[in-house]
Length: 114
Image (cartoon, rainbow, N blue to C red):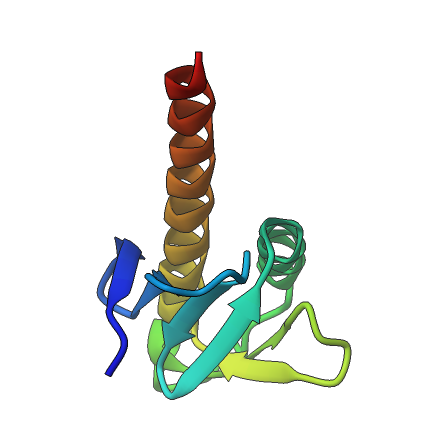
């Protein structure tokens, strides 16, 4: 199995890149789903999370914040996910942490070139 370079991890998932890959795609895995995303697609995904936060919740639902009634659009216009508000927050953290770490790594790489 190829080695990975972990970028960020939280309770719901992990983001990483393959060590020997020439691809600029970041693997983001949560629940049973994996995404292969560019930095721009991660930003788009974050925007879709913000859009999902305004969806109305079921007022009488017994599951509360664990109810998977939120429809989260993904960067692929053919894929949506049903998530709970707790999962939505965890996915947002995973993507924000990933984006932060990617940008920090890029910044440090640029500084070290000089």
